[in-house]
Length: 159
Image 1 (cartoon, helix red, strand yellow):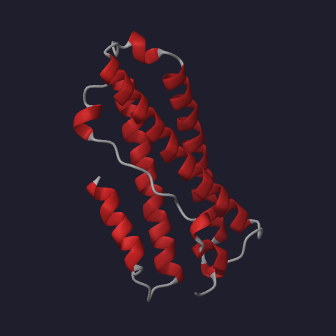
Image 2 (cartoon, rainbow, N blue to C red):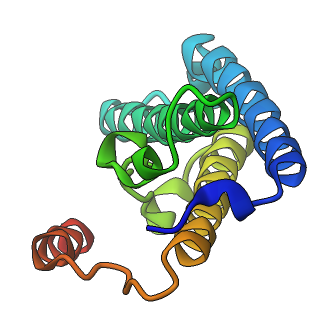
């Protein structure tokens, strides 16, 4: 693995700081909305829909926590608390998060859909940033070259 020192640390810091702020604001909005009982006020009284809604709130929270953990790892790298080689370690990479079924979320209130779509969009952006950093650090590496990871990814998308 090449050294990550060729990354522009100033640009990287501003990018990470902006994404971190966005993720923390979204996490606070999600907590307020999902814990505040707004769903009952928005007409989700059917027990089956409430269970689906609860599952989606967990997906949003999981996405945001994976994003925040990854961004904190990036901050630790910026401060020199973890080394360049550590960035490739799975524990410092963006965790896998389940996607939301659009057909299911279309029946949710606007505020819920906004949080669901916003968290997925932020997760996708952070994932693209991680992929871009991987290409910069190891241009010869092929994404998902690990056959076990590829199989897990296929299983994840199948279910």
